[in-house]
Each structure stands twice: as structure tokens, then as C-alpha cells.
Length: 88
Image (cartoon, rainbow, N blue to C red; front, side, top):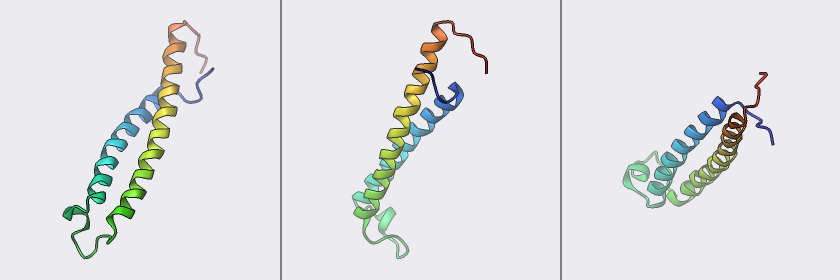
């Protein structure tokens, strides 16, 4: 199987996805717990659990990106070990 994206794009996507998963998981956990820093103000959302569900769905999207980009990075590393000639 050939990679669809370049190696730089694949590794960049892996790094961004990992950071996004960690940060969004933390934010989602704070909303789920109705932490005062997230829902304590009058301008903040009232239902923290509903917001947490939306944030955790974004975590799921980033997990799909991480899986795809990680597989693309793996394909690039496997291709470079075989001594393939890159014409791009």
C-alpha cells in the first residue's frame, strides 16, 4: 500500500492529534465535572455535561486522525527501509 500524504504531513498530523487529544480530554473532563473554572461564570454554559459530550466527540475525531496519520507515517517508514526511489 502506498502512502497518501507526505511523511512531514503525516508526522505533523500525529503530533497535533496527540496534543489535541490530551488538551481536549482535559477540557472535557473539567466540563463533565462541572468545574467552577468552566461553568462558574454567568457567561459560561449551564449544562457542562452536554458541552463535555461535544468536546469528547472532537476527541474521537482527533483519534481517527491519529490512527490515519500514524498509519501513513508507518507506511513511509516501511517504504524508506526497502530502498524505494522517491520521485516526488
